[in-house]
Amino acid sequence: MRRIILSLIVLTFVLQPLLASSDEKLKDEAAVLLKSGKAAEGYEKLKEYVRTEGKIDYSDYSLLAGIGLGLKKFDEARYFANKALEVKPGDAPSLYVLGILSQADGKNDEAIKFYNRVLTDGDKTDRSYGSMYIRALLQLGVCYTGKGNLEEANSYYKQVLAIEPWHELANVYYGTNLIREERWKEALSPLSKAYNKNHERIEALGMFAMALAQTDQFSPAVVNYKELIQREPNNPNHYLNIARCLMMLSRLREAEKMMDKGLELAAKEGMTTELINYLGFAFRIYIEMGREDDAVKAFKDLKALNSEKADEYYSDIIKQWPHLEEKLNQKESLAPVQGPIFAKEGDQSSEKL
Image 1 (spheres, rainbow, N blue to C red):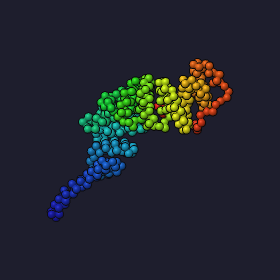
Image 2: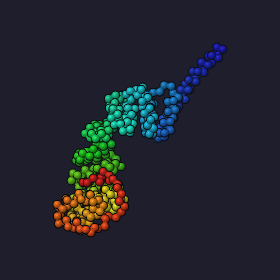
Image 3: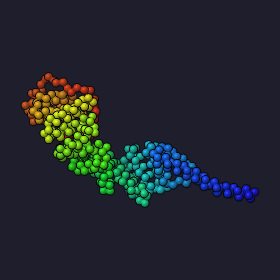
């Protein structure tokens, strides 16, 4: 009997490390899957490890929260983030995950509290704290932008840029807010940095070109609008904006060519807002070119498309060109621009220069 008991004790000591290594094997397998880009499989394997292991480190919960967020398993991400915080209240990645989830639910005030906790309560000794700190600052800016407090939002973007001057998103978001505030000259630097950092940031290039035009830098604006056209040849807004710049440079024939191309695209796609903008511009450029009959036709096309907008233009036209009043009010109407007309919003680059 003594020999049997001794054998059982020995067997227990032998099996314990084997069982432990079996659990650790799950974690190792999860790590391999995650490193190879198989997030969903690695996530499930790590969950299996958590279910079988008795004592779990907060970092496992924190990792699951982050992966769950990326996989859009929002309820699970929230659960694991809260479990991590039960063990370690200052776990910055878990606080950040809860902030993102609150934003997704439209709860900006709640999100702001979580991001502020990252800044104040996060474990500064954790190797992930630096990146979480910057991300929290960035998301605070996004939250305050959503609340309409651009001054507060910009203060957070500037904190990010003080740490990382070439931070892509911080430059885009800061530059966008400056555009919203019509601080054109200040917007040039962050938007330029954002596009130079990542040439896929077409929206940054578009706003940069707009800011150049708004600061009367028409020649460089033309260069940037040409690049936009190369990148997005079917966007009619780019042709209108470059045409406006070319007109300001007295390059009228080039402006007309760009206008015609954009007008054709807008008519083909039935883009009402863009057509209205083009016809208003067409009147102006034809006047500049001394082609009053074409200008009158453009106005009548505009009136056929949107009489309310035409009426807004009418008083300004008569003040500047009173001799056109009779022609503008002639009964016969000219054929409007052909093409299916559907209401469709233009993008930010369609703003008037």
